Amino acid sequence: MWYTWIILDKRTLKIPFASEKHALIAKQTIEVDPELQPHAVKRIITVEENVLIAAFSTLTIRLARLVANAFLENVDLVVRTLEQFGEEAENPPSS
Amino acid sequence: MHEIDCICFTKGPGMGAPLQSVALIARTLSLLFNKPLVGVNHCVGHIEMGREITGAQNPVVLYVSGGNTQVIAYSRQCYRIFGETLDIAVGNCLDRFARIINLSNDPSPGYNIEQEAKKGKRLVSLPYATKGMDVSLSGILSAVEAYTLDKRFHEEGAEDKDLITPQDLCFSLQETVFAMLVEITERAMAHIGSKEVLIVGGVGSNERLQQMMGIMAHERQGQVFATDERFCIDNGIMIAQAGLLSYRMGYETPLAKSTCTQRFRTDEVHVAWRN
Image 1 (cartoon, rainbow over the protein chains, first blue to last red):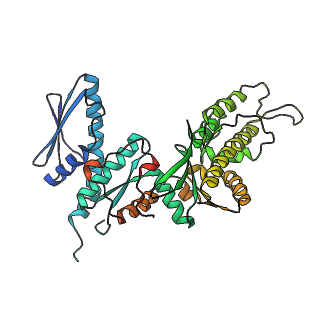
Image 2: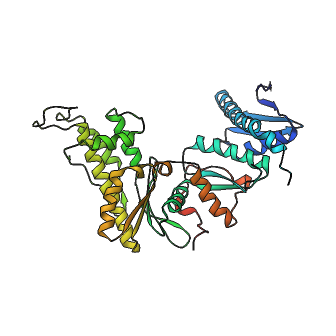
Image 3: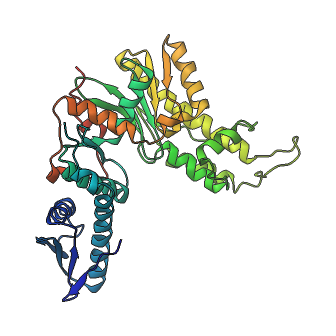
């Protein structure tokens, strides 16, 4: 599955999701884990309509690469889970 | 998925990256299907699966794996750690020695050490390091590794020569560390007057360990319970089992608290489902 993202300012990642609900799920899932180096990395995760937006500020370029990589790996896991189970979730059994 | 009651996941202890991967998926599913999360302690998972499979009532539990080595006994809604390793886990010790003597990892280094040990003929002297109720294993690993640099160490040779083979070292290592584990288990049994031993964790599938524990338990008119490899080795259903037991008592993990931690002591869990 292709997903498009745009980097702005070299510090912001924007990932569109299938719906606002999915984007919110991604935000709530990923933001639970704190950054491993809070003194060196500032992270703000927000949602605008169906787009997940992550803005990072880091003390070094190396950290920018690391946190972006880790964030995208987490997004990838969430996206694959949503892909696998999203349809089933939309169709609850009528009882 | 709509029919399930809750989603259980391992909160810890363990390695950070795998734990976090699972937590992310668990949280996603929890939000997608609106099901509560239940964070589970990995060690408690082993214990509850062992109790369920074997039917042991109130055993002293020897939890031995690559990452953990603990002697646990239940008392007043807590799995209390009576004794444990002061440094590395016994599975870690065995696996690292398997690598030193170039044993295959297929199916597992521990299994291959067990098979090689059966061909050992000579018991070499290794430090026997029980410290009260605890054990120390890193010194033994260094000692057995030192034997591989000994001039008597040879892969194979004539039987009448003064030889130490890798099989002899496997045998000696197993006999020594397992005897230590049997001793600290026996201390816990004597302390609380228990007659049952439950062995859980990957190293619990070692038949020599089960045999040695059986000899000790038999001398105390007790018995040993062990599961087969399907449940000794880490698995998902033990997490579901332990999670379900705590969920039934009303325990849930809120999303904000569903982080994972690499250090999570067995005795930090409130065992509400037993009295």
